[in-house]
Image 1: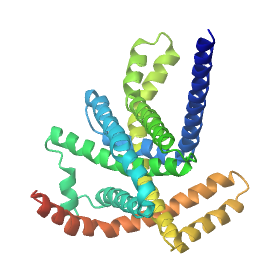
Image 2: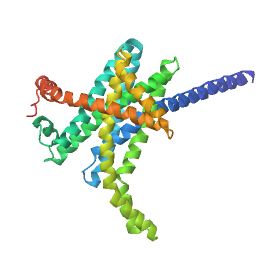
Image 3: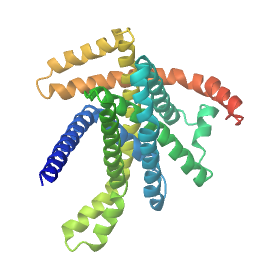
Image 4: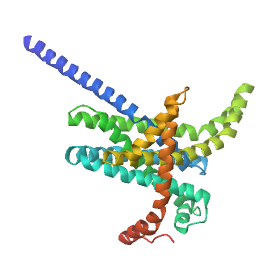
Length: 322
């Protein structure tokens, strides 16, 4: 009997440790998710533009494919890579993030350049070939997953820096929890956004009240404008997140001038505004980061399309765009 009681005591102790570990993981995941909230919002803003223009029955399958790619980015590639870098070569994390930030600047600037000069560059124009819908979908999904990889790397890196546990496994489990929850939240919200017009049609046709039918019609009329707005915000998000990654990386590497000047100007604007100074400071920071990201991205367009692209094509054997 005493042996059984001792065994039960051991089981109870193990259960307490396990419960404490779960609480620690949940707390660390919540804290890490809060720190990465800005990039999460950018991720949610970027994604809807990748389904803009497709048939309604392809929207959810495209989002599902991007979400699966996002999970693979976070759990299969980024989680082990970041843990290994954090342990063996932590000094490489910032330069790699800056490369990702430069890619975001390039992609955002490419969209702006194409909007301003639709036929100005054959290399850019080749990325917008819409003759084959299946090919376009593959290109859009691949592009979304590449962009998600950069944003996911930023999210996971912020989360890793927030985790204070010395335990390797606690870090790994917490990062996995953060990655899964953020992916479900982001792509669940995106799926709801892109299907709101269908919800509106259903309400307009089946609602028993006039107000309900009017609300449904309002959703149908308003969703194209919302999707266009989110597409614009997504492009802007690429620029301000990419610009911020670069300026912050320069500060970490010992060139803090630009990062400090942007934040100094943001503080001046915030102190000069009696209403919502925090929001004003954030808006100024995001705007200046975005301007820097746009300038850098425009400078990178010829580099990427005329040097890097042909070099990759030569290595991989694929034909470069002309």
